[in-house]
Length: 278
Image 1 (cartoon, helix red, strand yellow):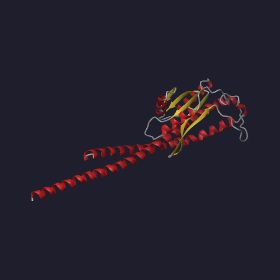
Image 2: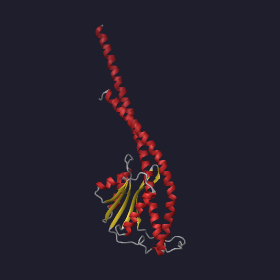
Image 3: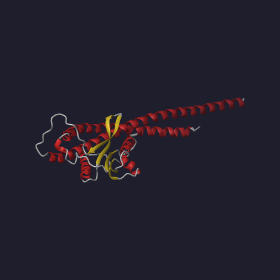
Image 4: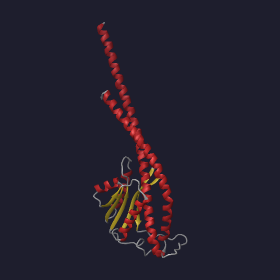
C-alpha cells in the first residue's frame, strides 16, 4: 500500500493537471465561438458560389470544358485538412482513417497536400507522397486561394486526374463528420429549372468562376475543420477534468483511510504502553 507521502504527491499532481485541463477547456470554448462566427459568415458565400456551379454543371455548353469533362484516372491529389495540435480526442484519427480508406479504394497514384501538421505526420508514416504541407493556424482566404490555384494548375496540367478534399464538417459541438469529397472534375448534373443565361462566353465565365468556387470550398473546409477541432478539444478536456476529479476523490479517500489507520495505530500503542506501565 502506498505511503501517505506518495498519495499526497499524486493528489497534488492530479489537482494541478485538472487545473490545466480546465483552463484548456475554457480556451477551446472561447476559440470555438470565434471559429463558429467565422464559419457562419463564410457559409452563405460558399452556398452562392455552389449554386452558380450547379447551374454550370447542368448547362449543355459547359460539357466540353476540361473542368466538366471526364478523363482517364491515373493519379489523384488529396487535400487533407487536419489540426496542428493534439489533445482533441479522435478528431485527427477519424479524419485520417476516412481519407486512408478512400485512398485504398483506388490503385491510381496518390499525391497529398497536407494542411495541418497532424495529418502530415500520419501520412508521412504511411509512406505516402506529400508534395506540400503547411500549418492551419490562422488560416486566411489568401491561403485557401493559393491552395486552390495549385490544385487547379495540377488538374489542368494533367498532374491530377481527380482532386479530392478530406476535412471534418461541423454539425454541432457534439457532432463532427469526416468528409472525403471530389472537387475536380465536376460531375454532370441534371437540369433543374430554367437555364442560367450568360452575357459573355460561357467558357470565359467558367475560367473565372471555377477558381472562386475552389477558393471558397477550401476556405470553408478549413473553417469547418477548425471549428470541429476546438469542439473536439473542448469535449476532450471536459472529459479529462471529470476523470481527474474522480481520481482526486479516490486519492483523497485513500489518503484519509491511511491517515485514520495511522492515528488508530498510534492510539492503540499508547493504550498498550499505559497498560504495561500499570
